[in-house]
Length: 391
Ligand SMILES: *Cc1c(COP(=O)(O)O)cnc(C)c1O
Image (cartoon, rainbow, N blue to C red; front, top):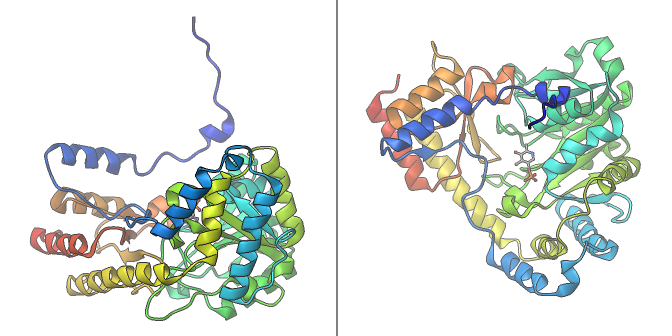
């Protein structure tokens, strides 16, 4: 005998998996023996630097770390985060009140709405954008008003264009720079406008800075918290995932306004018991240790970016060369939708890219290339697009 239990509305409300079709096509093409070049995944292909792995190794062998993470273990990582913020951004943080360890930043992003969103409440998030912003809000029973990122606005949200009733109702705004998927960066003046917007409309800012350390040409991305007044209106999410090639390790953190950090902690203490302490010790070594590994990682991405940008230009694509992140956000040639063009690249050239509408409706007309394969594969991909005369 089986049972029939209906799924919760929040699960039924989830959008259909937009990459399902591409995944199926990919599997079919791979079956034909095609050597697929996957430029779709936002997951670094390079390994975690060895000194961080060594630190995990050491900590994993200490039985004290086999138990639930201890409060003092948490403090050790939080202190390393505060030191790092001081060195990197000149931002002062109280490790006991203004820092919280996360099991990857996705975890914190998904959970923060549970602390602030009641059924029927509203949050703001950018479109295109990281899908977790609005699914987290949805899981809390709220809904999302999307702020479209348009080329004519430099892929920054037009805060002045948000209708008055939406401003009144909204409780949270999710923003992410350097941005996934558009690869745009934000400067001090944007963050100043964002802080004023939050103050004027009584909205908490959740800034996602997952890509702040992946940058080129000597460019240094900012922290939202460097903006005067930012710590009174919001928090910033961060992660070791992209910075140190640690996506699989699940270690991130949130910093900023103390009562918001505490509220997130309250939610989390009822859901999880923290990140594996050995991973936190390795995280301390990553943040406090030699940062030469970062320059090496960025030098590799820059090499890839240079090859990709030159190749895409030669092929006649329209796009902005990225200053940060490992993505390039490219306009789909006229006459195609994002999905059609991504399908064409796969069918004719064996190349996987992500159709822009997968990140929200405003991503239609674009596709995202992830530079998470070695440069010879990027060169090969460009060659194939050329030879296949894709469009
Ligand atoms: C990769 C990514 C994250 C980080 O995810 P983790 O859970 O820390 O691995 C957060 N935000 C964006 C926009 C990302 O692309």
